[in-house]
Every structure is written in C-alpha cells, then in structure tokens.
Image (cartoon, rainbow, N blue to C red):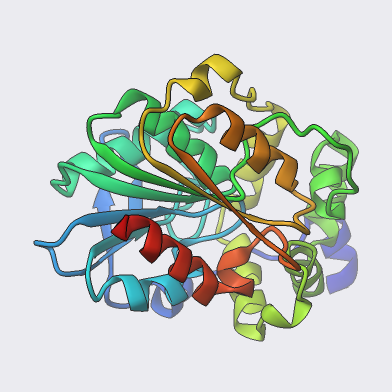
Length: 299
C-alpha cells in the first residue's frame, strides 16, 4: 500500500521539528527577513575578522561547506545559510523563486548581520547569485570566489545528470516527485562528482531528509518551470572585483568551458582548473580548494 501511495503522492513529508533537531543545532540560528521568511544560518569565527559569506548551490544546504568552515573560521568571520526552498529555510512565504529574490535574501541577510564588506564564495547556482549581488554592490564585495558557477552560456553539449534533464520537462518533474527516494538522492549526488567515493552516507542522508522538508520539492519544481537568463558579456565585463574561478575539468553540470568564458571576460579573474574533479570540488578536493582560496586571498 505504501508503494502505491508513493506513486500517486510521492514520498512522505519530513517532520519539521525532527529535521530542525537533527540539522539545526548550535551554532545554527534563524533570522526573519522582511517578507516573513525565517532564514537558517550559521555565523562562526571571529566577528572582528574579515567576513566570508558562503552561498551554496542547487539542492544543497549550509552543511555543504563544513570542511571549508573548520579551516576558514580560524582567520575569518564565516557566514553560511540555507537559500529559500533549501534546507531548514524551506519554501518562501512570497512563493517567488527568480534570481532577484535570491539576491534580495542575500542582501538583506548581510545587512541584518551588520556586514560592511565581504568576500563572497558561491557554488553553482550560488555562484550565479553571488555574481548578481556583486554587480549591484561592487563597493561592498572585496573578493569573489566562483566554484563551478552557473550563469554562463552552456557552450559545448555534454550529457547532464539525469535528474537535471528530467527537471526540464513537466513529465520529468511529475515522475521525480513520485519516485524520489534515498537511492535517487545518492545517484543525484554521485552524478555531480568525478570521484563517487567522495560522497558519504551522511551527505546522502542529509539530501534525502531535507528534500522532504515540507514544500521544498514543490518550490524547486516551480523554480524549474521558469529558466533564469544567462549573463551577457557586457554584464560580466562590468565585474571590477578580484575574482577566483575554481572549476573541475570533469564537470558535467557547468562544464569548464563556462569557467573559461567567465575568465575571458572578468577583468581581474584567475582561473584554476582541477583535473579529475566534477561539479562539487568542495566535496572532492576541499583541501585543494582551500589552498587556492588562501593563496589568492593572500595576494
């Protein structure tokens, strides 16, 4: 009976209280934005040190940065948060999922936490959000790190992960909602990396748990009904901020050609290409990423 119910209604929703108890313990905090959304965030390190804000990608959450934070928090104030429709932030009360709404959330969070200048580190979708924020706040963003950022023309055609291909059609979204499982969460994560052993059971469990936070999946489907426009060359050329680009050469989601495109247009860009690494370098080679970020920031 449970299997039949799943076909019609999809997997059961997670219990918010249990999810917050599991993933929202200290140092987690919640802060309310002007639209009524309660943003899940963590603010760690020395509050008097320079501030780094970490912006995660599609279907991720603030925990994706845990290997970064334990090193960066030694010398920096490190802020990370769950984007709307992700993690413990959950779906937005205004039911809007265009990029401008994500950028507005980031801007308001920075204001509420009293941050006057920041280094932004954005992965994938979070990189695109970080670019958009930087274009409007170049006096505030002192450095920009883009890890496999979306928003550039796709260029060369490569076989993208099955879940992303399915998201592009109404039938695909219908099927995902009804057959979504922990095993599919595992496969989705493994499709994002070159070294599948870098994906732990803990990562799989968290993606499966938080994908069932009430409303998160429906909000994701709503977002995928409307595609976000890619940046054009004139927009990208206007980025005056020093920018570090980190790209896995085996990325099938945002191919390295997108990194080359950004590198050719951003005036003060440095591109680091990582061999035998896929779309999630923060999982596959966090040490190498931190080494590149630290040396770039020192310069």
